Image (cartoon, rainbow, N blue to C red; front, side, top):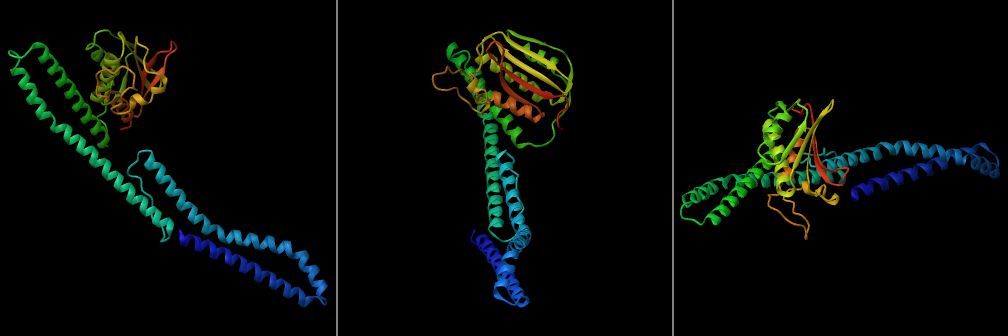
Length: 329
């Protein structure tokens, strides 16, 4: 920042120098025109405020381009920081000049590039590790099948449940990684969300569906996964029956899911959408991967919508997913 201080310092010195020169010039001219020193003092005193105002205006006009140039670069740097903080890992700012502000912009770009590289490497590692788990899982599943006759039925059932849980976790991690890393357009089709929800509700006992049919544009595989995760969440953490309502308006379709339980406490409305979220200490924990609701929000946002937890009139909570009729493809 030393160069920046020097620039402002010299600007101040130049302003003072101009002020002294202007004052001395006026004093000399007035002294030449008036016979007595007293008359010069009177005229200088009368014109001093006018000269000071004109000089201050000139200094302000002359200093504005310098100050504005620095402030505009700082504003662009602020916008880059805000974009990076909002999740845009590709955010960069132009490097202009050779002073401290330019070096700060270069340092920001280097840090942003490093963060982007680390996040991408972490996601790729997670996706590759999850993919590699498929092979040992298949071998374990085969071994369990071969041991059906000799193994204890209770132990065999526990192994099958553990394998199914791990397989579901691997599948959700792979999907989450794909949604994070792939920026290609969706495989958008015309989808009847009510018909899709009816197919998924048929897989769960006690799931009740209501709504009106209608088409939206989106990826049917991802929308099916969104509905399945909401139903699976209600099965694992809620109390039957599970209610699913699909409503439409002129611009969007809303999916609301709730059950007979008390639902999510108000303080946890946002936390439940965090990946691998676990309830607070003292709360009953149930089986689950902790990725289901996070994927619901990812899929909704990938379609230009959103997912949230909302309070119902009777005090319970529900999950509300809003999807535009036309996805951003």
